Length: 405
Image (cartoon, rainbow, N blue to C red):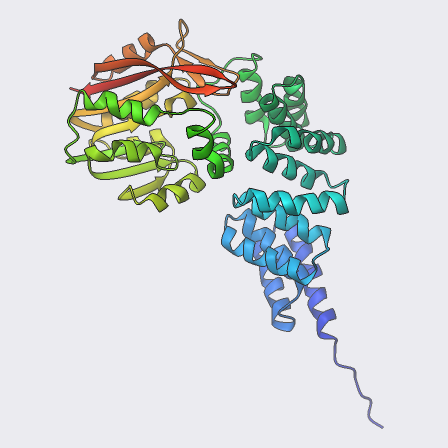
């Protein structure tokens, strides 16, 4: 008499592969995890856990398009899963879709109020939207739920600083003592609050993250509530030195979303924009102002393009560097003889540079000019201006146009 065997249940087989993949993912073996999730899809194309976990890997690797698709499919399969909603909210925030992220993460907070990571993500998304008052309860709760998590403590520190509330330095010190990978950012924040020596430059990861999160509201806030006019003012000063005849090879350092590029486009035959923030570059690309856009650190890019440009402009960029000697040296080297450099600084006095509470550097113009002279850059024009407003107060700046000899 023959025995019959029951065929394995497809859903159970797919689920077993997902569990194995999750175990591999937990120890950092993403390649093995991806292979297992794909095998699960071959058995069950709608396996939601595989979609969610594969989406998390895609987000961590920077493939936000895939991450958005996978997280959306996972939530569609299980709309009330706080795990899937948490991953979806984090992905939306990472992609700069902040309003949608807040909506999703608010659902997570209601379903799973003790989820410290989602609380932190929600608070950070609200801060990125400028809604700091709404963000603070979530950031405080995240820090309380995860007192040993350096990222939660650092997020609280940044929120307190933006809110102008006490306790930012204390939270930054907790982040620093908790260890992890946030030490450089915590020390930079503490230096901006007057604790410790200001570094010669901020952590590159801080600058990239700052402008990636700021990108969706960058222009509206700068040109609206902050009364920002640096690119226009710099172009006006440059016009008095150099006629805008559209013949030059132009480099726009720290191009951001392209506001500066629009202002200096009349001088360009060809214009390249450089920025650390991929999200800023995505917005700049939509303007069609540049012939080329590059994601790079500015000194590194300048050093790789010696003698490549007739005009190098940097509007509201050098205030994110402390020691300007490397930048000015590289700028001079990137200019052709007879070329021009046009840039702004936030005006300081006395010390070569000071890190302010806004986490930007102020520079003494006399020191900057001395550095420039040492690099064969000669002053051609200078103007003292108000660059923007910050918390209702004017931010004093100096515009400079220098010539390469």
